[in-house]
Image (tube, rainbow, N blue to C red; front, side, top):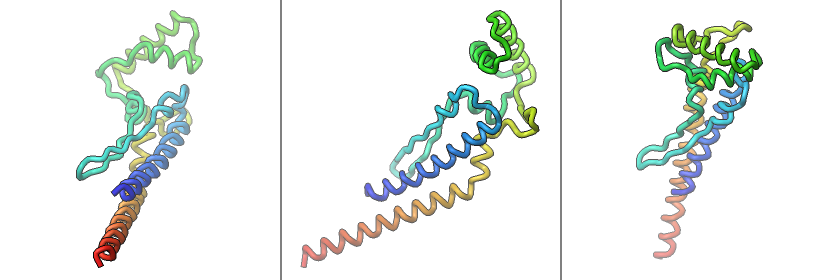
Length: 171
């Protein structure tokens, strides 16, 4: 059973590595990678239960807002995060001005949300994760199907080998 599980794990890690690479490329292309925090937080865990194996991805919480935007009127963006972003972008360095800008940005996001439909370059600035998953849906399905088929092949081969071995011992 270990060889089949190993093959499934190998397949899922292969799929994850490819998707992670594509997501990071889109994220950077969209101009979001200031600190590297989100990129460095992308990881996956393979969870095995009795009847199912799951590849679960995770990343910093704010990544979902970079992917899908943020609705107006929801919980306010933390001031400290906005202050850090303002400094990293080089918009301002004076502490009082940074704080004032952060409150203004926070208020604007609360009032209108963040839809980020277009960047100044005219390219999309959201969907770094969703777009990659949607665009690669068929590839994901094919890779997993091939990995599972190989896993079943290994399982059947091991069953036959074990049965032959037991038959020879009994004879």
